[in-house]
Length: 186
Image: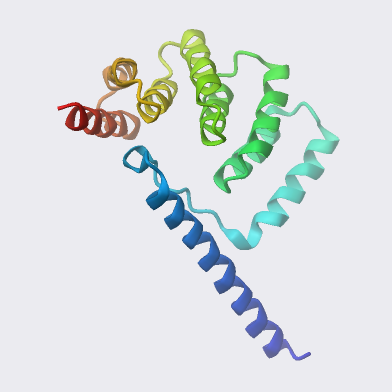
């Protein structure tokens, strides 16, 4: 097979993978009853996913308690909607440090996306209790509460996120979600 043919096939595969990925994102956002609260998808370089995953796994095999490597692998799974695999990695990190608020935050969101919203709220409340000034944890807690119809609790959590810093991206997202809640509740 010539190099030109290989490049054509590779290009076709890339287009197909991207098309499927974009269709899944579109289906998820239009089929979800909570689409008003859905964060935008995180762009990921699809061509390098397998290589990144294998590289991280290899590095983790050499240093199994390296929090940063584990977190990067968990984030890779999370960003590619492989939430169950992300959850497993986040629990590994929490065995190393049960008070890792960034990990608790991402675990809470992954649990929510797998349908375990009650557990997600528990985890996110734990994150905010460990670090009451962790703005993203308050935002995530408010997001999950809003998505599950707990609007009064969501308003409090989102207000807390806004009060920590109303002008950064996290504070602005909290304001956006809070305004959506207020519109829907009249």
